[in-house]
Length: 117
Image 1 (spheres, rainbow, N blue to C red):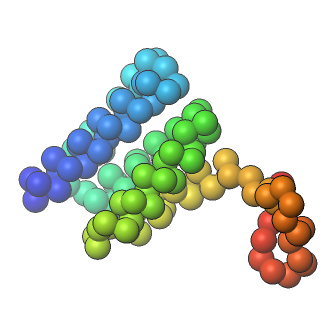
Image 2 (cartoon, one colour; image 1 turned 180 degrees about the horizontal axis):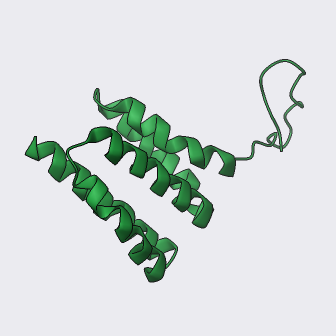
């Protein structure tokens, strides 16, 4: 429907603005090649391109990782729709997160699932 199309296109423009601000105008312009996929009525095509953009931004602007996760958690808590899309889009950003023990805490025990970098 046209409402979903408008939402996807707005999301694309938001991602492009973020890239332009944090990475650079040239990188923002480079994302224009994905614009028509977001205007498509084929959801799988839009989703695939959203993931490609997420991967590119995660590599180019790792400094915004924690802000992105913070906003994503807020969105996940406040919506009942499309959570799986949000989780998929966050996956490329996970490689930017390195867990280290907090000062004064005990080291992770083997087999407890915790990782440290």
